[in-house]
Image (cartoon, rainbow, N blue to C red; front, side, top):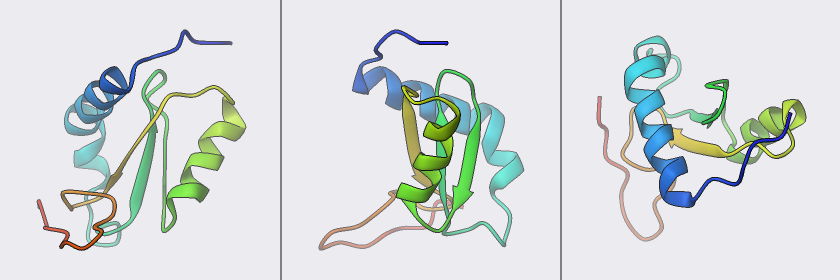
Length: 89
């Protein structure tokens, strides 16, 4: 199945919405804090791991053209360049 191209803004909106409404309560556990979650914003499927590329590739193996959004569980950003990651939970 192929999905229409989704804008970056729409991917961000959908990803945040899915995370907050459907996924966060399930994944923000002590063992997952600091891990990466990648979410397919069209299907809601997600993968959790230590590496953004690995989680993304797992989802792309299921759907090559997936629109993906990523988050570091329990933090305000996936990576910090010259800055600091802040805990959100």
